[in-house]
Image 1 (tube, rainbow, N blue to C red):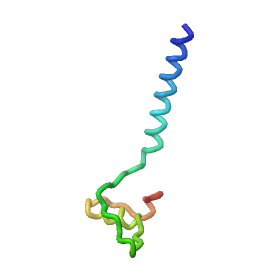
Image 2 (cartoon, rainbow, N blue to C red):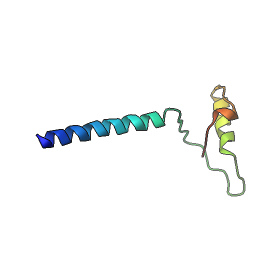
Image 3 (cartoon, rainbow, N blue to C red):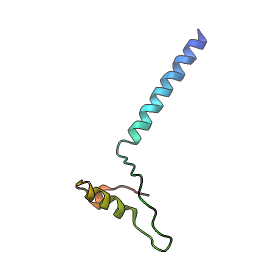
Image 4 (cartoon, one colour):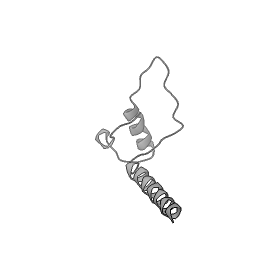
Length: 69
């Protein structure tokens, strides 16, 4: 009986953890395949995001980006 209760609690905690991880990433977008800038140039990652969005006809502004790296 105790094993069943513990198993149920672990399953519930695992589901809650999964839900929380999904909620935290609700506004995240991952862009892959962008070449790294040369070591001599320092490019703003927000600028890269804005350029990619422009190429995709997505209307965003710098203020729409909370963080990029």
